[in-house]
Amino acid sequence: MERTKIADLRQHIGEKVKVQGFLQTLRDQKKMQFLILRDLSGLVQVAFWKANDPALAEKISATPTESVVSVTGTVVDNPIVKLGGLEIQLETYEVIGPAEAPIPLDPTAEALPSIDYRLDWRFLDMRRPPVTLLFKVQTTAEAAFREYWLKHDFIEIHSPKLMGSPSESGAELFEVQYFETKAYLAQSPQFYKQMAMAAGFERVFEIGPVFRADPSFTSRHMTEFTGIDMEISYIESHEDVMRFLENMLQYVYQRVKDAHDEEIKQHFGVDLRVPSVPFPRITMAQALEILKEVGYQIPPEKKGDIDPGGERALADYIKRTYDHDFFYLIDWPISVRPFYHMRHADQPHLTKSFDLIANGTEIVTGAQREHRYEILRQQAIEKGLSIQSIQFYLDFFRYGCPPHGGFGLGLSRLLMVMLNLPNIREAVFLFRGPNRLHP
Ligand code: ATP
Image (cartoon, rainbow, N blue to C red; front, side):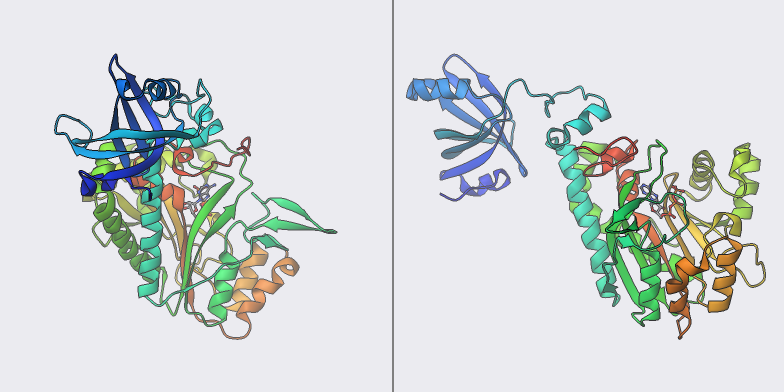
């Protein structure tokens, strides 16, 4: 007999079905047993008259919760049943994946253990419906990004994650043994996205792993994360990139809202707002003025940069002033941007770059890139990079390369802000941090 998903049972009233899933709870009464079964699509109540088969009743009683069971029975319409107004009258019962008791993490418990403990038992933690929902939302969001890119003639690339030289700077770099020599794990697909521009691909995207040897313990950093990256040619400035990004994010939010609005409200208490476009834009110079006005002091060691507290203070200001959850922070000083960001012709101390702040957290960095070989080379020297190790990259710009720009967005950061989660560890399948490599 074929398995029926719990969510589809209403279409089978009066029929015999087979359902398979976790035994969430068992209410063992004097004459009857009520089992709650859970599969990915929902919950159903299964009822059994003990007198029908006392030996089977005993087998049911002895099954630890969270075991995987297979049940056949008849679906009956029963308005009294809270779960969807129907139940299955059990005919056969089999334990196909027994659980040991006690279970180290009960996915149905009201009180949640600490995040660290939950990460130790992540597969049990992920049985909780809000976590399952998060990955359904992630799937919808990623599909929406892809749809949007494909509608706009993008080419998908998969760039290598093992590199012979660093892609950004020497900092935050993982070194790995590579036969007789050393390799580095890619800190971003930056160089290769730009290589695709030099190859004439015009518009590319990549969704792939990014590695950062960042030893800090914050609520928004991981040592490995999924990067959502794109790069486009024939732009006039970073404004073209920002325009594309805001329209795409609006599309992604709308798709997520269409697919999961009610569930997101139920499990995360979030009423998802599809952002209006254009997003507000403020320059770094304006941002510093605003922070002064609201009395926020950036820690002195952050010279030219804005710390997370500053981002939140600016987000509050934007929310009050424009009623918007997103804003672009543009025109960053060269001191806090990589060498490949293009500089303003009339203000050479500023880059044609942006960060996107969503609900007070940075989720994207982007820029127009410098595509003129000599200038790019000069900027690399200024930043103290070894020209020899990046010559392969500089070569991309020697034989005709269109003006271009793009961005990198952290997938888990996006989910974190979308679902209002306090910590990025909640927004990723398996967290990787300075002291977490397991499971
Ligand atoms: P931050 O200032 O938050 O450390 P960054 O400026 O180093 O980030 P970029 O190198 O610009 O980040 O990377 C682009 C995007 O990738 C970020 O906006 C963020 O969404 C994501 N990202 C960067 N570093 C991490 C990380 N360690 N863990 C998770 N996501 C990250």
